Image (cartoon, rainbow, N blue to C red):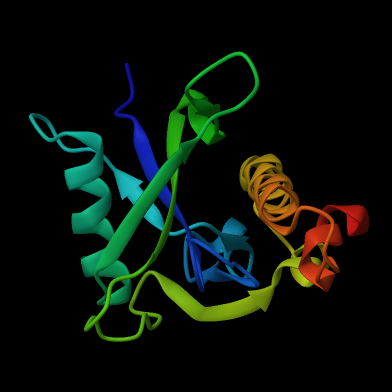
Length: 160
């Protein structure tokens, strides 16, 4: 059985998100330039959150404050390429952490407005996850505004 994969939907703020960090792959060739959520494989004996912490430090040079896990409807794992399964957490850059930057794994690490995420060429398996993140941000915002003016990002999934 393939090792599970972990990824972070890194937001500019867990409490009032307006942007997501989208990373374009450097390799393999067939995925080069396509965007993904950063992360990687869980090593033997490693728990998922420890693996994600390690992967983000290795790939982006940053530390995260973890939010809640984002799960697909009816399950805990997102299906991805090669029959693998992926767990995804919301996160933000931890206070005092270096800013995330593209390393060898990525061509670019780009902060993108939630309403503009659909304009990026995503790896197919990550697209439903990104859609779920945007929808989650909208629901959270609607719960906190309680009738006050809704900001532009609250309608981001309307662009999908």
